Image 1 (cartoon, rainbow, N blue to C red):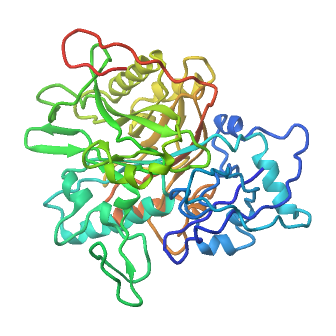
Image 2 (image 1 turned 90 degrees about the vertical axis):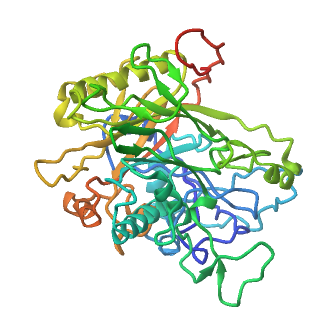
Image 3 (image 1 turned 90 degrees about the horizontal axis):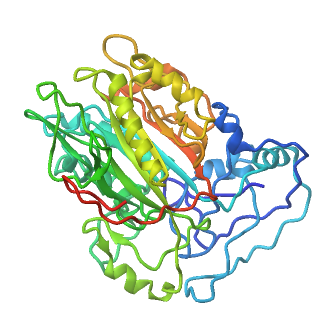
Amino acid sequence: MLSQSVGSKSAENRAPEGTPSQPAPVSEAPDGAPDLATAARLGHDFSRLPPPVPRRPAPDVLQLGRKRSRRSFNNEGSLTHLMVQKNLIPNDPKDLDYEPPKVEPEDGPLTQEQRRMNERGWGLDLRTPGFSAITSNVEKYGARTPAKVKKGKQRALGETLDKMHPTVGMFQEVTNPDLFLHGDKKVPGLEDFDVHEAPRKKVKRGEDLPEGLEEHRGLGEEYGMLKGPAYKSGNYRESYPLAYDRSRIHQVPELFQMDPETHETQDVDGEIPFGKKLGKPRPTTGWHLKVSKDPFNLRPPSKDDPSTGEPDPEYAEKHANLSHRKPEYQDLHLLNVHTSPSISTIKRQVEDIEQSGNALRDQGHTVAWGGDHYMQRSARSVWNRLQETEDQPEGWHIAAPPNQTNFPGKGVGQTADHFVTDPHRMNVSSVTALPPPSEKRRALEDHVGQEVEDSELEKWRDLDIDHAPVHMDATFNPFVPAPKPKAKRRGRGRKRKT
């Protein structure tokens, strides 16, 4: 069965919040229809695209979720138009914002194309919430970066984040995270990127907008933006910022560092030294996320303020009528990856990351990691081993696109950017390398499930970015229980509760 998801890059294009999903009859799939989530683990078949979770069928009940353009929504031949499913949003009498659906089911048989899409989605549990992520190496972004280059990067990365709308966006090699996220007088930051195409204006609270203008809405209203860990090597600095969808992740993610010897988690305290002179590659860092399990993406009674890391009192007061809701969350430890061949071998670095992943998994956590690995060429034995062992109980799964993702000025590129997941806890449905924004690719469905040439990805070089972002769609295994909290351990260094 398939679901209909609405929304877009602009306010004009987003479906009204009072518009429910359009229901349609559902046909039964034939016996032996493939389990899409399982089949995706056996190889990257991009013709298979799972339906998303239903989003926003009633006013102010649901939060912003996966987006779709109006162009694709109205196009009867598009994938979005074909993904139809009965409205499954539960009636919550205690939610004062709830309005029941007003659209009656439509009569009539399914078309051949609708039936084909239903058969593709057969075997998927639509009540299992999805998870998506983007990893992107931005190739230096700091005070010395020319304003024209920064504007180009912000436009391209902001539009990519807006149209793909991942649960999390991971960024590497950001030399000034404050400029990257918050901007300055010359170039706005990522959190201020416009999600409207219509004329807009920033206004003070309570101020009326001039006729014909819309209130400015930036990505920072949909995403929490965190500067991430800061690394230093001599005078060089770089950080790994994180953007997380606040409609899916309600508590501010916790940053941690892995002890390189014991592979235990520690608090990050200040800048992390690394470099060739020290003989130290970048120590592994990561984020502890709690992703909402709610398949309908209902508003929670409480959310953290990203700027303080504490519950937002204004939000709690506004949604006091939702105090009866008890959201459940999926535990996820997401590790940052940025290897460097100038310090130690790539093989040693990715093996250290794998050991950290093993240690976290042994504690009962769901683990994944993403970034630029360079192991397809520089640690081929690890690359091959991870693919050969993914069906074993302790194996990992390389979630990589079939394309070259880095485009160096000299030498040959490779599939450097990708994710690694635990296939027994996460089912990966698609992994896609993303070219720069263009008229040809303006919506999510113009990317996921569509072929892309390396020559199209190489156009990131025109923006002074030598890596193509990579997008992953996955679902969590609902049968894996969350780990029980453990007591603090005594020992050297500051340890986190696991």
